[in-house]
Image 1 (cartoon, rainbow, N blue to C red):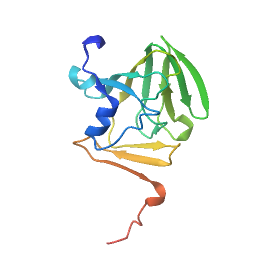
Image 2: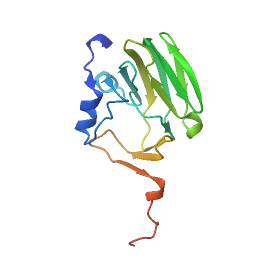
Image 3: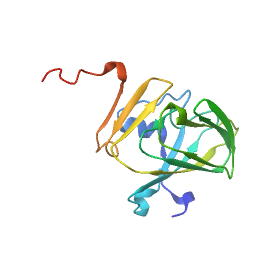
Image 4: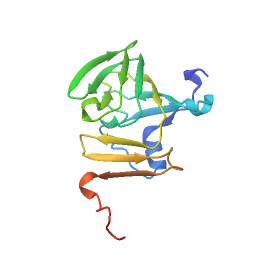
Length: 163
């Protein structure tokens, strides 16, 4: 498959299909999931195109899965833990699993689209942490078929409540 021929979905449309609303003042772009179309079973990969001045996803970390990003074209910035790094075509970034110290987000700081190949392990269930908002997500499959729960730790119930 050539990435120029890949089926892209607008991120706002993707969020709507999952019953959510993308905050379009900060987030925007499109995504082409490649893994399923190519028959991948243990690796997830997609091409994410980030609009100028936007981000594709919130600042987050994965507790189980590791990600790698290859910048195909454009310029941007990687937020990684408490640091920020410039990105340009040809850069490769590794984001290991862990907590806030490895949280990451790619931001398009350029005037043109930022195109990134993202590759990740696809271990489930997964727990993601979102340091900017204090949320976490538990995922056991690909939405909308799989279980997906997003909450804040302070909303936690007592283990024995209601038993």
